[in-house]
Length: 86
Image 1: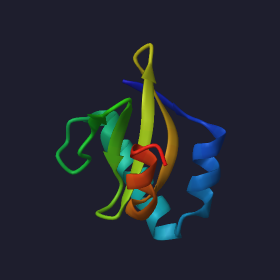
Image 2 (image 1 turned 180 degrees about the horizontal axis):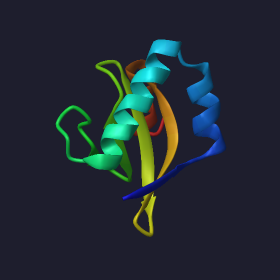
Image 3 (image 1 turned 90 degrees about the vertical axis):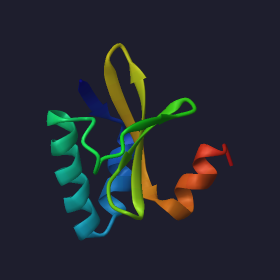
């Protein structure tokens, strides 16, 4: 599966603590080789696809023409309301 990230994603990514950025990169590389790996928990939630970065952080994307477009990365405090449209 292909992917790309939006400007907003990279803006949020750069604001993350360095250890979370490293974890995100590690999980992304794993996702590229095996999107179904259990540690990623890559799943569809409503209109979005969710991927686990750490126990407390997730990334969200949408699919378009066999490409995941990552648009958000952040912690669970922000993740829940985002999924609920708040």
